[in-house]
Image 1 (tube, helix red, strand yellow):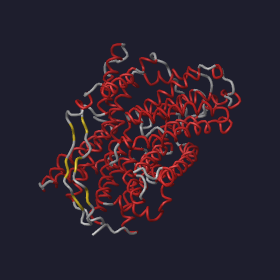
Image 2 (cartoon, helix red, strand yellow):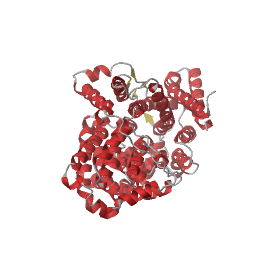
Image 3 (spheres, chains in turn brown, orange):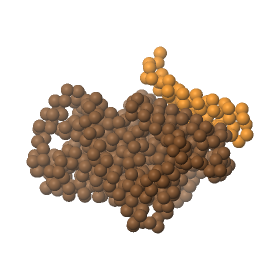
Image 4 (cartoon, helix red, strand yellow):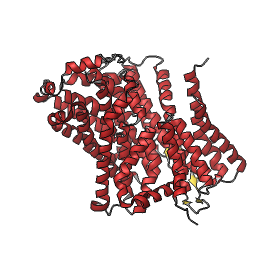
Length: 543
Length: 56
């Protein structure tokens, strides 16, 4: 007996995802609440429609929990490191340094709204790039709506490998594809999206006139960053966005030294900065945040330097990584189990999480190193640690609940055959044309959940199964899913709200989404067409 | 007395802990043969999923 794939079972399999979409978009529920409801629905549908049993579902939840812990460890570690630096004024100091560098509007935009927000995505994520980037741009005199839209566009390409590659880890875990084979394709798609995002950010600010004047620098900056991400992703995915952001900032800093960009030059033709500054200051709700350099750049960056050193040590000191990863390892062994429809989940180990050697642990070590440095230099005050922990808990709990509920839901869907049913229905319905729409599925997931990680958890296995059913590369299909989920971040209401609230534009989210929507859809279709060409013309032999 | 924000954070934290602990500690060994453990596991996990729905 096999799973009957028909309209009824297909709609039932879609119900958990549909419920999350409706609850988040129409009922304005948080992702954590909607995720829990999605989990309940998946559980009931698996039992009643897909003839699963509680014993199998218990295993699915246990397997899902290990994967959730793998992703959450990175999220909490990244939040800890970010708040350690932010609490001593480090993030503000790094931003203020860039503001001082150049008066050229295009370079300011690329530095703050593209390179710096990419770096922030590399270390924190969760809307931090928008929360920090938008006020900085308003402070520089950019129109507030543009100041929110630009960081949304500028950071979106880097989300998959950002936040220490938690979204990429989720993609690996949900698809079961090996990271070393997946990374080159995923980084190629997101890197390509990065080049488009640089141009879109400039277009959003100054239209085609801006692109005409800034296409050269945009291409150099975005090209260097995309190439860095692609290269690093194959060595250490968790550092790919982080290092791409650093390279981007260095490249812009070098460009600001060139005589052509030292003065304000063509900017006055592109825009009238005084008018924009007045527009920004004139926004009634804007609270007028100023950025003060509280410490030298090198000191502000100390915790991130520590992170680079720690990761390099783990990577290059022979045997260190293996030694670290053998202590306190969380992993579970599962027997083979199957539903009454005969849908089999093979026996084997769950994901493995080493409490001492995991990427999340490295982030915590870097945070501790940062605390030591800031204590020695007198920036770390008594009581700061408690504040940091409080902020980490406040920021991390909601997103962790959402991620956990959705991971458990995704595992129920995969192991009961619901994901297979969805994939089978789509592959039969759209056939070979489907890959063109594949990135838009990723965009939808990110829009619904506000997270590339959750999008990958929800749709990663689905996309891989569609690829298998169509007889095309699962690596390319999974990669394009993640690239779609990544660029979908520029539309996610959760992130847009973070941006608008920091510049006093609360309630004007529609204007921001109106600006980013066209870029996201255009880019989604471009990536889909490229994916189709790779799958059916150029890379037919890739597995 | 804790304000609403702190109370919500504590409830969410408790829900998260239960979501993470119930599957490996109760459901996994329970699913390997101990029915009572599995029943407790399901009760704890369902309760963990209900808590966020009740938090404002």
